[in-house]
Image (cartoon, rainbow, N blue to C red; front, side, top):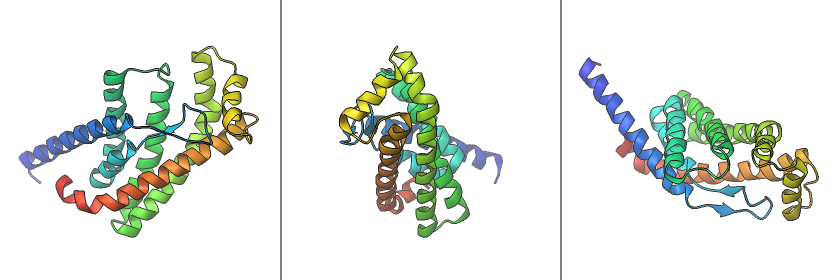
Length: 200
């Protein structure tokens, strides 16, 4: 690949990353509440364009799109979580798309994509539970001057299985991430082949 071709590829990838990040920001506006988790856990499909970009351009590009998504959303919509939600969104989003893209890069088939998304969903669920229990929920409580018992109580109000921070992670965070990973993966599986020529 000569220098000019390499430059064109880089410019095209940067443009595609920006486009996919912008689509992700729009998708973040459409959130679906869940009956088993408190109101601040809502599913959106902003990871769909990120995962598509990860499969098309690689895991580093996926992390880059995720980062751009957070920056654009912060610039357009600001934050109502003192930055905690945005930090969580970036880390947990990367936990899904980076492992999925790594697997797919080794095995560029439909089954490779499926395996990658299963691995990514499992890793996202593990990372989501760990970060929420050990970092994000305590940081959220501190940022808003709330006791942890109040956050646990918000979970217990909609899910009687939630009695402490551990059960919060097991019965709210884990199902949330499993469901989100499944739905995002299903959508990507259905659309990726159709839009891949555009990305290429």
